[in-house]
Length: 499
RNA sequence: CGGGAUGUGGCUCAGCUUGGUAGAGCGCUGUGUUCGGAACGCAGAGGUCGCAGGUUCAAAUCCUGUCAUCCCGACCA
Image (cartoon, rainbow, N blue to C red; front, side):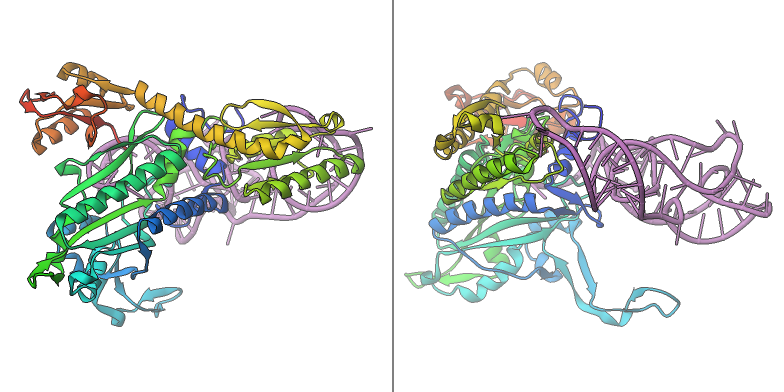
């Protein structure tokens, strides 16, 4: 389409397609602040659906929610060495607490007399404030495990931002748990990783690789990091969630000890884990198409849109009546439904409008079909239309939604498999990543040296996305020779260009 | 922070070369038409042309400065 109604086609410019889609699907808007965005009602409804599903899973695994402050005293951030190095370069800092009228003219200036004794950092993540608090909460093994999650906003002053994928401020959840033993903390971090995998695959319909981060990619301050990695339609990897085993690093930095059953004083073991509004970006990049946003039914803000037709009063009375009845019955069945009664827009306009905004199914209620006692149901993922008798609609919709949920996952899974490659020579490896775009997941041998990983990244822009917990193929777990150095490698790891 | 580009009604952009009373399409408001894949007619509303300074009788247009945004890289969830 040459006008500005649609989005740039994916094969023309994937990046432009994504940017267009986020705006035109009404998910988010630009804000007055660089790198920050406004999440619009439709995008926020999607986030709320994600939150609800995840929160239920956290609760079901024994976690409770709490809330910690937005500000972190600068000194806290200094306490864990790796953590400082990871986050110091991207922090927003509060230095004053007051403005005053500019004595030289108009406007306001920062009041120099209102300088803070100690600067406050706007949290990039909350380990430090939380562990400073946990010190007071944990004395005995009886206080453990401590299983807390918080839903919050955080700020990371990134140089370059993209809506949902990387914004200066973003929304997320961060779980912070404390345990008596290494093994318990390990179990916790793996349990949450499984929650994330389940959520990604069963709710988002996004297949993911489950694995461990290499040393150079792990969280700043972690003992080790687990990750789920998805593959976008432009065959790049995207980290969709991480779960960290923090070992005793934060307990030592914040002096959090407990008295064991045996009476000894021990440092606590910790985990932290998070997913963010980046999941929305992931969802878009995996499922959406040139007509706009495609939302998996389980998370979609609008599962059914009903478009009644008719210009004259008499026809409208019929189509509106039927539509309202559908809406009431579907809502009673727990389905998120809207009736689009706007009178100025043509049906065709509404079809495109709701396809752009990711409505999963559409019921077209027109006078001609009603004469035959039927309506048309169209589904968003395949574009298929079917004629359904009026009294079968309420039963049929959930079937289509379930089928669409399964189909989105199956399609993405097939795409992942088709874009997962095994490479054994450097020449092939280098040429795969030579172009501008991604090259999918590439399983190759690596000698486990950070230096090697850095050299590979420098030459190809491909990074180690993860070391799969379960080999994708049994042969992936067999030893081999490093793709770059030829040194021994215990197993294949996953390389990709990443978002 | 480097490289590139752009700032003109809500949006997309024309006008600038060659200074002379701010335009189009979309959207918006009202109204009319028998609404099945982005309908059409009629009547309207809406802009100190990013900001500051300069040149000039006269600046969206020329000059200087400045700010901002976007895209590409380096950094990252």
